[in-house]
Length: 247
Image (cartoon, rainbow, N blue to C red):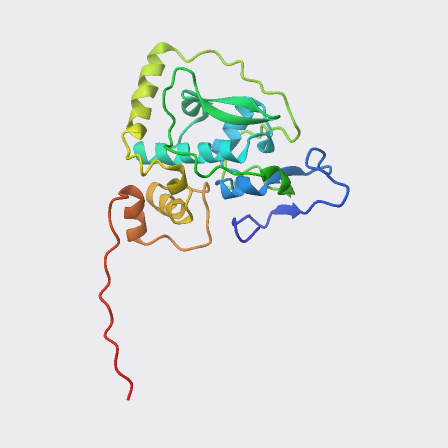
């Protein structure tokens, strides 16, 4: 798991014991569901997750993997539409809100929104509650982060979402920015397309999402970057090598 998701060495991973459960982690540990890593979560956490979780007063494992995948996709799409500028929790919450689902929380468009950033949900994860690991160490902050050390919850907490509504003037500005995301092609905004390994790597090289989606692989070739930005660009056809007949 550490190699698959490029988890830093300073992050401590521990499998559960025979009598341990996800809702009662050992002292100093939190629970991380492996499907959340598949949906784009990385350790240490990117500041975008940190900011949203602090706003909602929720622990990382209280957000379903599908909800985390929607957050990842929204962050990537915003970065493309806004030329690499980071998405903030306020901008994300202008169109999305948390909702309770069977004891956990997912994300859903606000009632005033008639669309979501992605065009499908084909990356839906099933039976995710059965696959988890205990995490400790430096999982919460990136080494280069210069954030106030306001820690996010480690245990199950009650949602705190009593935020005042966004002023009408700001709503118009945010709507115009999200319309840039909406203008991207539906194929590009497909969740199954955005969360592919190749496109996650290409997004890192294209729009500079430092620390958000990391990989030990080198910077992706230009061809892959173009395929992310312009999905209709076809791969160049390489000439076939002439085979030398054996004697």
